[in-house]
Image (cartoon, rainbow, N blue to C red; front, side, top):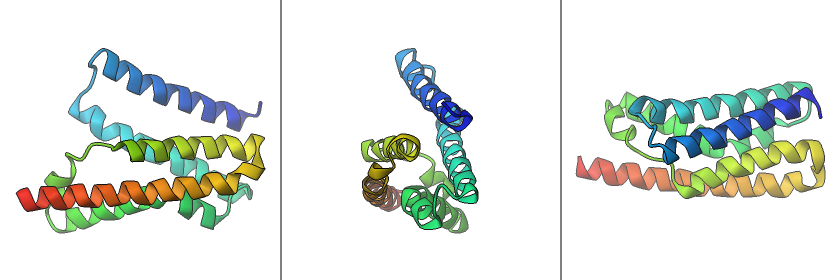
Length: 147
């Protein structure tokens, strides 16, 4: 096992246990709810940018795998620019969004162990990412209409 695989494996395990323990023992806070997705995005982008630099990943694959994350970041910037950041902070992750994260991690491992599966996994990651982003847009629009 390479050091890269070990880091990704540890990140995956800690991500799972972090969520599991928080739900199991009701160890959640507003700060944790805000920081957890930020930490996930930083991990994702750091792995992807490292692999682009190393030649393991193309920019196109990075963009496809990060469609949800890029879209959410742009939405957040838009809401901040509109002065409506308070509305956007109450959106909780959807199941499809969590599935996108699962596909991202599986794709990371496939890059090491099963390269033939990477194109299909990138497709599933991009597809679930677009669906999740669409759900977030609809949730924000609904909140915006209510506020």
